Image: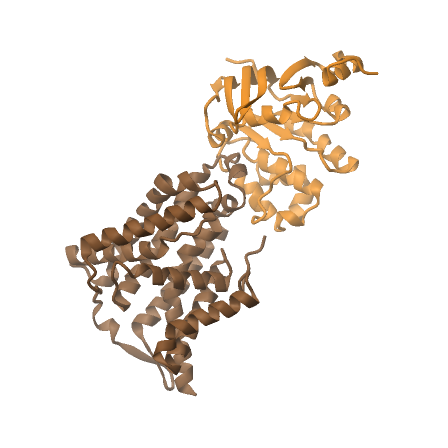
Length: 288
Length: 236
């Protein structure tokens, strides 16, 4: 019994990382109304930024946040202002094709610069340290830290959306950008701030991913898929729905892996498929 | 210094390639109500869209001494020209209070704040935490006017504020227009109902086919003049 409890707990902790992957994608859906097919590759790009920061400055891996988060915020802001704002508002296809192209450009640029070798950030002892959470249930400090960071970050995002002026503007821009412009806001600047925020969240996910697993320039699409599944399971545009979706995906993968290691990824896809059939609007649909 | 809160000269505007306004001249005095009347398709809402920077236009638009031509809708709103759009267009994801607060984004100082809006339309205070779609049409219109006022505009443009509302609700809203102008805000009113427009406004512009074809103080305009201006021919 405690074995299965341990597996579920491990799945929940892994779900924390998936929640970080998915939060930025959920913002793209919820505020910008675009499906960002380059999301996974942008996460991988942030992994390489973290790698360069660590190798260049000699910082401990987990302190690279200080540089990677603002760098990715700036990149997201510039990406939205310089590219995506030009293609939104003319239907769903132009941003879809643009982000698909961006995905290819990022992958190939990273391949050119860093080769296809596996990379990983070394975070030291925290990677192997663990604690006994419950009798018979041991968890690693790193997954626990990731999970707690995800909870804190999503709570901060929630506060940003519902307790600040900028958050009100984010939600209003999602509802009706034209009317928002009559309120004195430039909707495209609000979109750029939203994309910057989404990329800052991706940066946190990327540093944890780079410490937890090996990555290559081609690791992005799998992250996009996990993020996409978490968002769809939870409900598009809902932060806590995305969190719930990510946890369920993590648990499904952990249970699948316990049954047979080859079932790990498949179990998550099956859960996604079943929930898509039963509740296509997601578990926590965003109210209108 | 300009004598007018808002003035256009030779204003032409286009929706894509279709010209919808032809050399429109209007003047809006400070703290007055000016009504734009005319049949459907006369160009009233297109004129508001042009003033708000939403459509391509040529000619001069000035808010006091500040030229607005070529500015973005956001910049125009920041300078003090607010629009209450047709259909209210409240933000459905936001509560009524949040809808009002987002109207204050321009940061302009003036008499209007949440407390004053709630005093003007007390029902909004009761519904402050409700989502906008849960309000009646009249209450939504009050919220839309309140949102526009929260920017402390020099001129408030209201597009069809009586549309789809019961006479009692319309009466209640129109009764508050005087309170708004007493605080120094001018109002440009697009109104289908000639009776309402003539009662509320100090000056009326009648439009037809994208042009101003008649204007004057309501008491100076005869029924026959208005009918002729509306339809372009003599009507009984």
